[in-house]
Image 1: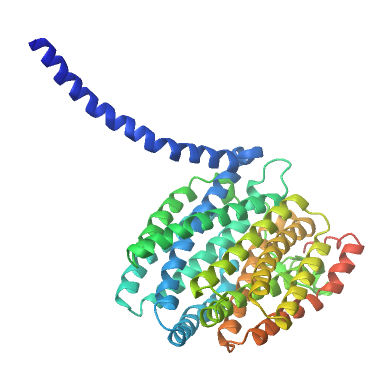
Image 2: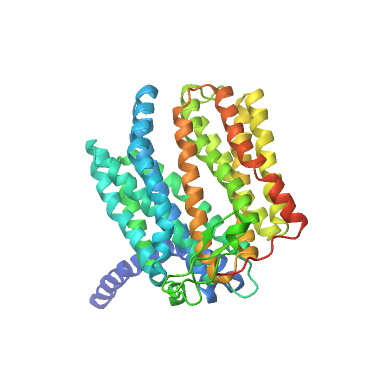
Length: 462
């Protein structure tokens, strides 16, 4: 009898730890399964061996952290006050953050171009800076302090610095037989999926308190900082690289030989690339314009039968779905006739914008957001294909860095126009049409001419 009681007590003591272990395994199993699925997707087709898979995962972490900060700032600056006051706050936000960024952005690419041996450290620094700034913002959004604005500017600069370095890193991590367009499609798609997954989490954290999305961003960016150093060492190698200067004029592509004692300059980006870059700048400017203009327009005049938040959500989902579809189509098309693809998608965006301006309505606004997202993704991938085709490998990473900086500045300028316009749908979308038309009409002839000749010949290197 005593032995039976002893065995019973021993069994009870043994079942306790065993129960905890069983619960732990049950909770860990779905997380581990999801991690294995993600790892198989990001490391497929040789991406794991080349290191591209780790960059894809890092970009997903970057997207999740950025959306956490975006939700926190949007709730503080935009949703927490009446529309008129929110417009003033956003205008102040643009003046204090975007205006200095417009001046700083052109410097980011050339500055990072001078430190090619420290790309992993540069990406880790961009992650770590945003982690620290997220903590600064967590105090600012709760207390309403003015330190929110310089901290937001710092986040913006660090985010764009990461984007520039990431564009320069991708060509170094291509698996055998992998096109640059396909690699960029994977990276971009992972970022979009991570952003879509993190957005509802950020919204739930916002319900707990305004600081909590920023705490989440801190944790995510610290993880990104660690992950940056896990990239292969070859991304820090600058063997065979030089700096590229964007030049559309043919006579600037052929420059005299090196002057003794001076560092050589390279005029290596031909007219097809610069025309494609101008068209992409128009689409990126449209994207910035729509984000700010529609945010206020739909808050003041939401879709019929919907609240302002739901109206904004519908447009946001449409834009995200269009972007994801454009990325997928770009991976399927790879580098087939990139000039024709750019001319076509910009023409489609222009037609949709004009139709939306003439027949203004909720459905057409959502369609314009989707088409703009689709065009932005597909045109950017086609620009990548042109850079891969026409720019020598010697200066390709530098060309990516500089083109990305120009596109970021275009987004800022488009956003500034959107915030300055009165909240009239027809007027706003007419301006949007003008932005796209300016980019399309000035580039269509050059791009079609380049496509007819099978691309421009590679210019000589000075």
